[in-house]
Image (cartoon, rainbow, N blue to C red; front, side, top):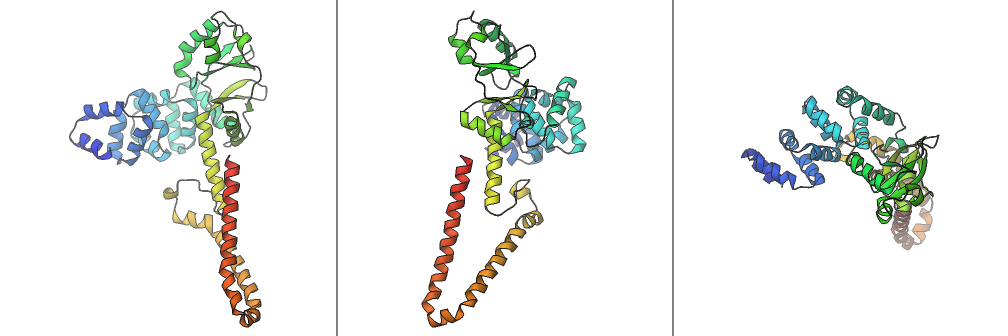
Length: 337
């Protein structure tokens, strides 16, 4: 695919390339862009429609996003930011250098900029940092017919429409209703009569891993997030929860392997940082090996009297290592599940 795209660009067949991009999934396009050189990457991105460009942009690595932002003009940047979901915009802005954040925020409408700044103020490991405010909220007194009219009106800008949240006049969460339940109800039925009041929710300051585990446990597509006054302020969707779990599981694997977790990708981390992350544990293991050697040397006379004992040392050491590897694997997988 990469060679085909490069050939189309070199032959100046950009209309053919645009048609091919329209047929591709946004994740596949993002993977393609990551493989291209800077000049070709920019050409491909500019051939995308507004909606597709936003979807692809949210799937790119932060380094690639930064490279694109440097080259996009103000109008192009505004188009991309307007199409991004709030949680994707917050995640993107939080990773950008300070000198670029001001330019990015200027491309966002004042009302949305205020919301993004509020989300950025939440602690990095909290549920508030990964939630989105783009959801469908309904009133209990509304009819099913009125609810569907609101979904049709606001659904385009919502990250999910399958689950709707029922709020009172103070925006406190009082119930949840799914599109399936509304489809099976009569048009004149009241939302309050078909909604579920047994609600699983989380607070904005709850640990994001705990929230992700809760989503996984109950097989929810989204989990409502409330503030300290029990008012609904956002939802955490399944895709964001899975990303959190992946990051946390990677961190657990690193710790179990006696390596300090990396902040950046492996190949983007310098040799010095790799060494610093591993040297402490390597020294500790080296010291423990010295102690083992000291114990063995203490029994030299026994080995001299019965040399056969030496043949058991590799077996015992390897078995200990294998048992440790098995135990760590079982613990990690149990923790992940």
